Image (cartoon, rainbow, N blue to C red; front, side, top):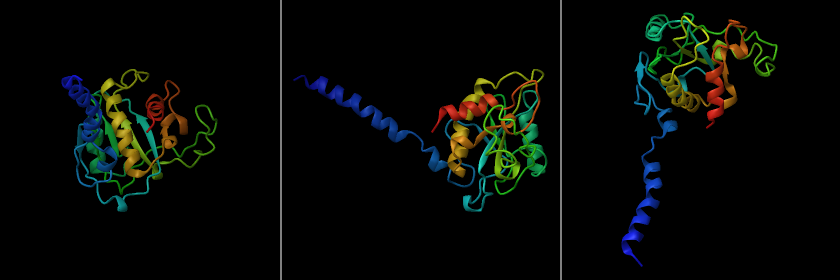
Length: 207
């Protein structure tokens, strides 16, 4: 038997195990406090994570899109940080994929319109009508669909969202079927479906 071939085969078989051992455990990172480095995300911490046991009991995620130009997520997040309960969200995502964590997770920004959609146009609104609201939902705002509101998210935003969605779900124990587009639960701008592409992606990506 060729000992070199055997050694090479064993090396190849060992590669997946080594790679797996080096893969960052997002679930473990998501349960920490402070301002952790999250692999794959450029995170700007305007408000650090606190003691998870003392955070607000978040049950859902609502995906928003703002008609601001590129660069507006930074400004929106900074304004939100100074006035946490103003109309806005806890997490903002810039067109270049930078994520801004703007508000302490024990505070509740004002977002959503009371889950007033009940026409079942996009999803079954039975479980959402008047139930998926700002008070129980983490809001994530994606900037950049200006001046064309039908413009989709950038590749960088999609890449960031793929990681961010998992982190949010892991931190707050939110199941896949509780990730919602704003347009799924509220009557919004008829020109486009706000947040729909991103919410659909999150559900399709799965665990």
